[in-house]
Amino acid sequence: MPQAAEPLVFAATCDLAGHVRGKGFPEADLAKRLRRGIGFTGSNIMMSAFGPIYETPFGTQGDLMLVPDPSTRVDVPFEGSASERFYLGDLKTTEGDHWEFCPRHFLRCALDALHALTGMTLKAAFEQEFVYTGVEERPSATYALDAFRRQDRFGELFLGAVRAAGAVPDSFLPEYGARQYEVTVGPSIGLRAADEAVIVREMARAVAWRLGHRAIFAPMLTPDGIGNGTHIHFSLVDGNGAPALHDPSGQHELSQAGVHFAAGILRHLPTLAAITAPSAASYYRLTPNRWAPTTVDLGVRDRGAALRVCPVFAAEGAADVAGQFNLEYRVADATASPYLALGAVVWAGLEGIRAQLPLPEPNGARPLPASLDAALRELAADEAARGWFGGAFHDVYLQFKRSELAQLGHATPADVCRRYAEVY
Ligand code: GLU
Ligand code: MG
Image 1 (tube, rainbow, N blue to C red):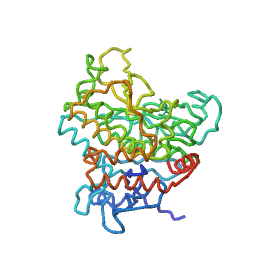
Image 2 (image 1 turned 135 degrees about the vertical axis):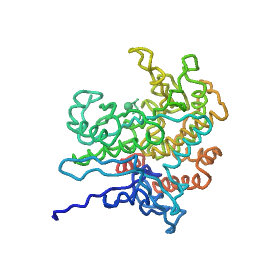
Image 3 (image 1 turned 180 degrees about the vertical axis):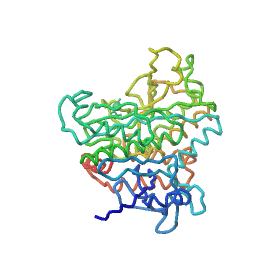
Image 4 (image 1 turned 120 degrees about the horizontal axis):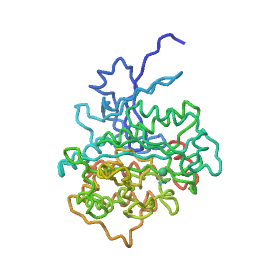
C-alpha cells in the first residue's frame, strides 16, 4: 500500500436509465473541472438500464462535457473507507451550451417555462421506498419497531449521510413489505429537489454497500411482491417564495393555478407514465391492491390515487396550512431519472395552466397504461410531449426505452423483476 492516497471526485449525471454515471478525477483539479467539466460522449447517454448500449443514434462520434454543478457537492466521510465525494452536473457541448439531450437540463427548461409563463416555481420532495437486504425476512415486520431495530445502524448512518450531503432528513421507517424501508427529506426548490432525490438514493446505496448489503430501489422485486414507489410531493411557489397551491375556498382547496396544473398532469398521465414509471417492472407495481395507482385520478387523502391531495396538519394552528399543502404524484418509481420525472410533471402541469384545463369528472377515470410498451405508445403519440423534449430528444428517449424492452424479449415476469432488481 502506498502511503499517499490521491483524493478523487466523481462527476455524474442521473441518466435516461435513472442510473448515476460519470467519471472521476483528482480533487486537485476541481477548480478546473468545475469550469471545464470532464469529457463525455453522446452515446454515453444511451447506456441502458442493464449496462450495455443497445442502440445509439450518436455512434462513436462527438464530444461533450459533463460539468459538475458546485451546488450539488457531496463530500461525506466514512470511517475506515473512502469518502463519498461527487457532484451532479450538466451535459454541455464543447462550446459550453447545454446539450439538448441532458436530463438535468430537461428539468431546468420545464422550470424556466413555468416561471416564464406564471412567475412561479416548484417546491418538491421525493419520498422513496426501497428494500434493505441487511435484515432477514420476517412475517409481521410491517411498520414494526422490531423491523426498525433490525436494520441496526443502517438508518442512522444513512440519515447522517443524507444530512452531511446537504439534504434535510424528515423520516425513515419500516414500510409494508418484507425488508422494505422508506425515507423522506424536506422539500427544496426547483432543480435542487431532483438533485436531492438522486443524492438520497446514492447515500442509501453508499451506506448499504459499506455494511455489506444493498438498498434495492427496483419497483418490484417479484411480480406479486410489494412495490417500491417514488412519490413526488410538490407545490407551487410564487415569485416572493409564498405558497401558491392552496386556496381554502378552491376545488379540493387547490388554488386556480393548482387546479389547472393538476388537470394538466391528469390529462397527460398515460404519457407521463412512460417517463416516471419507465421500466417493464414498473407495470407490475401499478396493479390493484398495492396502494399504488391504477387509474388516472385525483384523490383527496387517498393513497390509491395517481395524484393525491395530501393532508395538512392543522393541530398546531392554521398558520402554516398553505405552506404544508401539497400534491403527491404517485405514478413514479426509481427506474426514472428524477430530472426527467419531475421535468415531465412540470411540463404537463404547465400545459394545464396554459389551456386553463378544469379537473376531469371523477367518474369513469381512464386506466393507466398496463405496460411500458403501452405507455411508450402514448408518449409517441403525444404531440405536446414532443414539444417538452424537443423533437430529437423525444425520438431518442423512445428509441432508448424500446431497445430496453426489446432486450428483455420474452422474459417471464419473474425474470423481468429479477433483472431490474439486480441493477436498481
Ligand atoms: N408501496 C406503495 C407504492 O408502491 C406505496 C405505499 C404508501 O402509501 O406509502 O407506491
Ligand atoms: Mg410508503
